[in-house]
Image (cartoon, rainbow, N blue to C red; front, side):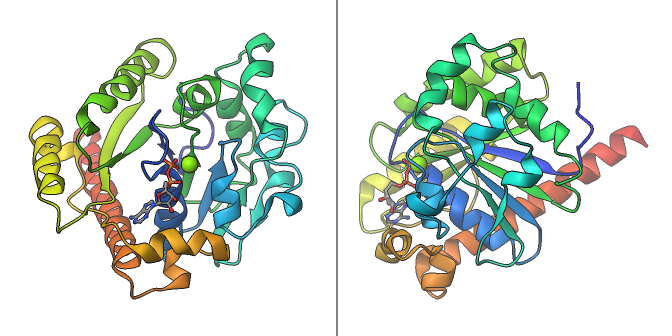
Length: 273
Ligand code: ADP
Ligand code: MG
């Protein structure tokens, strides 16, 4: 089932809960990766926070992921360079809010993003990563993301009900894997908004690790005011305040992701050799 473009790793940031750090992780992980790799962020949330956070306010967005999903324009005409070198954005257009309903009546409704990305192979030449920022629901937009990628990253806010909320998304991943995208993997869980001064954060983190084991990234993203200030300046925290604990954590997360990718590639090579 692999499409024509499989040199670009596609990762969806998904969790049906809002406010857990999907968008923040998409923006900042992408920015950190872009220091070494070529990256595209796809904003698939009608709220368009990833677009705003990468410096593209609503009024300047023009056409984006909605236009791509309905087949109006190809990827190459829709992606935009951000002010971060090597980082590109497919913004959320203002019509994206209607897509959830419009898609219901369309052919191939769960596969539209995958097909559009496969068809955009030429525009994606040289790209190493696509990070897809999903809306806070498990509707058709998130389904399109899960069908288009081979890996899902779940940002999990380090709070009391963390594990209860996560079963809904992991069950959806299993269902998509069985029915629509056998290559899909949970890979992996990122603990966000960790508060070192709060005992509960430690307890929750330990719980999540006991349950998901090596699926959980070693890197933990701390709660950091600079992270929450950055989007109002249209900047990733790495550009807003590089030395902040939040920026440093995302740099570490990117390095860990690249290490995991290399280890997985080596393992795959060993199996086919
Ligand atoms: P989601 O995309 O899952 O809805 P966001 O990434 O938009 O979540 O984060 C929700 C809110 O929490 C935003 O206001 C964001 O700025 C803030 N936030 C996210 N991560 C952190 C962090 N590490 N420290 C402080 N605030 C954060
Ligand atoms: Mg978001």
